[in-house]
Image (cartoon, rainbow, N blue to C red; front, side, top):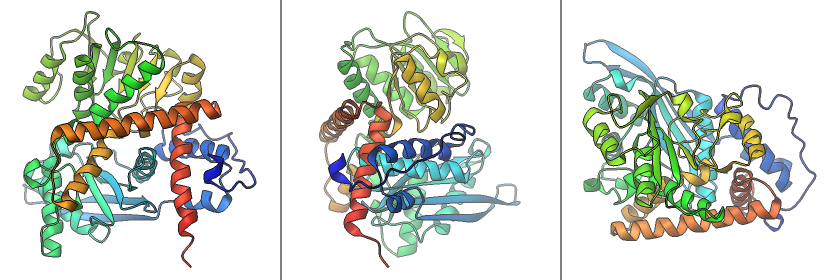
Length: 434
């Protein structure tokens, strides 16, 4: 990658405090960023630019609740980098949303888009609330007021949101409608992950899980392991985890354990994935599922298996449990499921980690396809979407693997090197506006 950047004096980043706060997602992201920056000899000026978000907006969201009382929520939107194109990133509703989490996720989106070489930058948003205790009407009022609060950042050429934790197609429909009412005409390209009837893309709902399946298939091929009969553990059985489990099962893998926030289920003979998905569809969670013996979310990570697919929230594999991970491959369906401190432990154990910014990039790739279809007014078949997604995921995996071998680094470091080089190169070409 040396030809992409002009080498300069190597930056030395002290390591002594790097993993003291491993549960801070922004610090975890920066630890990986720093390592890649060192290997790239990233010049100091570019280092300073790329380690800071371009813009962060924090808004108060007053909402009339169903009770007649007014509640005030806090909303955040972070635009991390737009050098390669409009910012792209999801919006999550969760009581544990923090500014550091949103900044980290916006940075991850920047590197993720660059890894798969789509023309987007990175952003992320969140509202601090407990959506599980709120009515549909309350959620709609929160969404619309939040959209109005951050509307200066939004737009198909500036910042394009998508669903994330506890948000979905319906939330994106409210967001698109609110934005469209403000500008005076329908703008379906302002968000992705919309209902099909409003310009959503076929294949979008399955895209992140499909991307994980493709990345896992490529990793197994690299390690000389056939798909048929490989044992898979899926931690997190939402949209990403359930679809990845279904597609891996269809490819001949045996899913031996699944879990969600209510707990886990394990069966040495294999979980009936179709039955598990039907249970969640009918009951919203896996609670009460009778397809195996119960197991905790902590223990499910430590099962012996070929593939471990953490598809829930960040920091489930840390220095506290990394030594007990027995999987040959970890495919990161969630954002930031492995802490920076755990990376070295997994490396020492010989675990092949497919990092989040590569493994779960299928979602943002098909979001890009949706945005392209909205802008052109020409819509693709699901077969075309899946074929183009497969091509991008396979090529991106190969590019990262090549870099990993060339520099003798793990796949995560290679992914960051590839992404940072692409973003930094554009900054060098554009220069600094003064």
